[in-house]
Length: 524
Image (tube, rainbow, N blue to C red; front, side):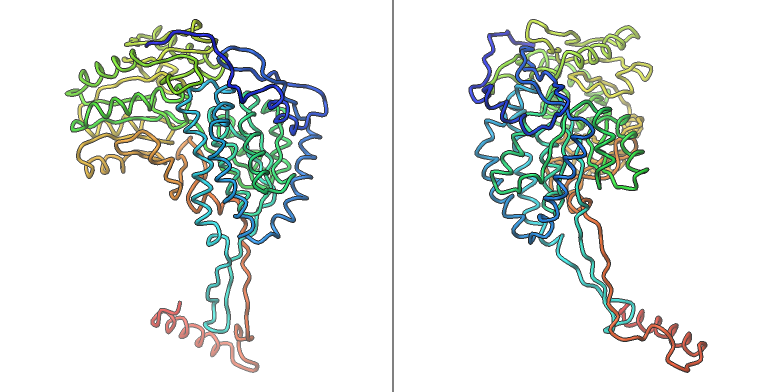
C-alpha cells in the first residue's frame, strides 16, 4: 500500500455559509445538534439540528399538504421537473462530490461515480413513468358489456431511511420514483452524511419541485425511526439486516408496505478458465472500492486450486500497491472508512480472525498516519465460519480467499450464507459462467463484473433474497411499489344474474357453457 498524508484543504465549494444554508432546512425544535465532521481530519464542519418527534410529525403534515397538489398535477408536468433536474445534477456533480467526500471520507473516484446515480435513475424513469402510471383498461367478466381499469394512485408520503455509505445515491435516487409517482417524501439520512442529500433536495427544488414536498428529518435511528414509520404510508430502507427486521415489524403492525435492502456476505467465484488479470482488477474494486463499504461488495473469493496461487500473488501485489490516502483529487484509489467507530469494528473482525488462526496476506492495520479512520486493504486466508468475518458482514476493505476443487463445491460454498444480495462469477466461457450464476442464491449475479453492471441496469429490478432484503429498487417495480392499485370496474348492462323468471338451473347451464365457449374462442 502506498500513500503519504499531506496537508488537507477542504474544497473551496464547501464553505461554512454553504453548509449552514444546507442544514437550515432540518427541523430541530429542541436545539440539540450533531457535530458533523470532516472525515479526513476530524474537524467539525457544521452543527446538524436533531429532529424531535413533534418535528417529524410536522414534517409529514407539511409534506402531505404539498402532496395533495402534487398528486393532482398531470404526470407529464411532474416529469418535466426531473427532466430539468437531470441537467442541474450533472452540471453540479463536482460540488456534490465535494460534499460526499467531506462527509464520508471516500476517494473522489467513488464520490463522482455516486453523483451519477440519481441522473441515471431520472433518465430511466423519464422514459418509463408515464406509461407505468397511465390507466390500463382490460376486459371484464362479460365480454363487450363489462370492463375493468387499473388505476395507479400514489401511496401518499413515503419515508426514506438512507445509509451513510451512499447517502446521495440512496437518499435521492430512492426518492425520485416515489416523487414521480405523485408522492411526498420525508427523508432521514444518517447524521454523518446528511449534507449531500440536502444538496440534492435543493437542486430538485431549483428544478421546480414544489417546496414542502420533500422533507428532511435528522437524528439517531432509535430517536427518529419510530415516529417516521408511524407517520409514513410506505417505507424505503437501506441498511443492516438487524435494523431492517425492526422496521419491517413496525411497518407490518401499521399495515403499510416497505422495501428493505439489507446486508450481504457477497461471494466472487473465479472459474478455471477466467482471465486472471481481469479477475484481479475486478476483485480490487469488489473488495476495496468505496473502502469496502458497499452493500454489494465482495467479502469472499473462491478460487480453483489450479489458479489459486496465480490469483493470490497478483491480488496481494495489487493491493499492496494501491494508492491509499486522503485527497480531494482523483489520485487515490482508496479513501477512508466513514468513522473511527467503524474503523474499530473492521479492526475487531480482523483481530478476531487472526486470533482464531487466519493468516494476513497483506494489510490488517489501521493507518492513523493517513487519517483518523483509515484502514489498510486487507487480504486474509484460512478464514472459517467460527470467525466474525467468516459469517458476518465486515463492511470494510477486508476480503478472504478460499480454494475449491469442483464447481459444485464452489457453488455450495458461495451459497453457504444467510445472505443473498449480490454475487460475481468470472469465466472465459460465458455460457458456462451463466450456468454457474444461475445456481447462486443471490438477487443480483454479475458475470465478469463485481456489481456495477447489475446495479447500473436501471431497467432491471435489484434486490436481495434470504436475509438480504424484501422488495426491489429499479425496474418497473421500483416505481410501482410507491403506488396503490384501484380497480375501477364498469358493468354496462345487468347480465350477471339470471333473467327475470328464469330457472336458476338453466342460468347455471348458460354460465358453464359460456365459460367453455369463451375458452375455446380465447376470449377468456
